[in-house]
Image (tube, rainbow over all chains, first blue to last red; front, side, top):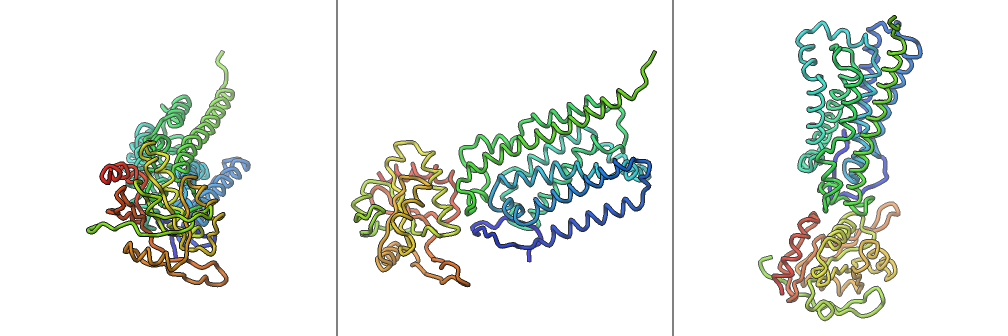
Length: 271
Length: 169
């Protein structure tokens, strides 16, 4: 019985369905936690439309996580195709964390204020500069060939990589989405710059994937078909990473810009 | 390898249906000899894809001095057309050879490689052919000093082949 998808070098790919119990349990746990948090807060101050949007964001996050980690994308990305691995990264490490944070109303984060030490730690960790640095270090480390080849062949190692993606993504989006701790100095323009910088930044793994003359990951280079050429697949992975991140960041910029304009239009004009 | 292996005296049939004398045809070339089959789900496609990638990265003078030879361990299913089509999908210069299983097993034994084992398919699936997973590299002098197991990466091949070519000149 498998708990989490992992790389199995030299093993032929099969379209025979295989259950990944850990993935299902993780989804059930997330749904349970979400329901529990919602049951403990009063979010009636938000419009019905906003509440529905938050639930839809949560459902989409769960779908993205489940679809990218369960069979067939899970095993394909863990063991056979670097390009699928990168789609998983976009889902688990970028899109799903943003949706999960958006899925909770502001009131859900208020209880955090009861713990001053936690607020202090969050204040430091989710400061835009530290979030930017930590996210990019984590992203580079979790795509570094030696790290990927070392961790992916075990279920625990593969889980650690996915968990690191998720934590890195939550940290990255926190200063943009979560109202606790408050950051009055982090203006919409700053938020747009934060996202734009991440969209255009050339990270070492991307450069290696695109410009290396040989495949950089042993697990994908030595994986049996469906990939016929590991180098082409790796270059596709690099393109997916770059274009995917840029599009998600661009979507974030659009949302922030729209909210900023709405805020400006609601502000009473001074005489 | 502690003791170099002499290129076997092997005459097989190529994908055009002509006789192919391994020693005579590869004399003076660096020859990469691999035994496998086109329906192989794991080792063969990986080796062929790796070597195809290596071929494209080598300097023309190294590439011209090399031959990649794939000997089928499943001559029944690997028809000449099927073999040619499969190899060309990786690299058009790769040679495909077929022959009687007795001849192939004798050559494998001569090269100190395990023989071919046919495992019948279960529940109507295709049979699995057990075959050596190593690639034997014969120098220009007809001697193999290195056996490359499954798992050798493209970068290692690109590093080693020019050296092997130089050593055996």
